[in-house]
Structures are given as C-alpha cells and as structure tokens.
Image (cartoon, rainbow, N blue to C red):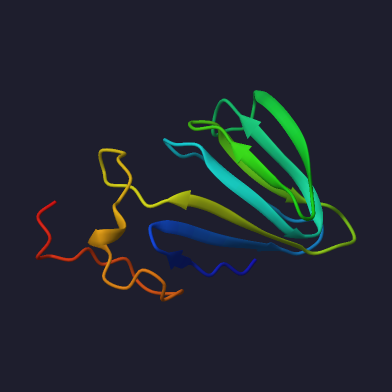
Amino acid sequence: MSIERAMYGNVWILPVKLKAGTQKRGHQHEFDHIHQVISGSGTIICYSDLEGDNILYKKVITEGNLYRVPKEHIHQIDADQGVDYHGNCIHALRHEDGSVVSTDMIKDINAGKIEFTPDETNTH
C-alpha cells in the first residue's frame, strides 16, 4: 500500500492505494468524512470496536462514486480480488477542539503536497 498526503486549501486528501485483495485496517475519526473511489472497487466495513467483532454495516464501493463515512465508526477498506484499488479520504483540516481550520491560517492554500503550517502571526 502506498499513501501520499495532499492539502488543498483547508481540505485534507489522503490517497488510499491497495493491491487487489488487500485491506486498509480500521481506524476512526471524530468527524464525518468522504471517501472517493477513483478506480477499482471494494467494501467499506464499519465496526463498533477496534477488534472488529461487531460489524455495524458493510457497503460495496465502486469506481467514480463518493461515500460518507460516519464519525466515530471504526472503518476499513477491503479491495476486491483481481483489481487494484485507488481512492481518496477527504475531510476538512481541524483544530484539536474539532473546529474547521480557516484557509486564512494556511500560508499556501493551493500548493498541493505541502506541510500544514499555520501562520504564526495570525491571531484568529
């Protein structure tokens, strides 16, 4: 699996690339986010616990579509057999308190693959 991170304005994009038949293990967020399928297909599986004992739901995901992943659901992506998978996890950048970062706090809002560095002179 190869993951590169990118930032555009205050939107964080995490590419997910999986070989056919592999998976991106479960994790969770304190906010809803979007998963976009670029190519391939697979399944998003949401669990109530990190051990994966209690499946809340499974959703087949297909190329060219966007899917909402609910906050606080532990989720993983399983790539289908026979085809590599490429998708993007997309969400707003957030402060520790959960509030969305304003674009005026970001030095270079359309630079693509850059590090998030708040403007230290901004007091907002």
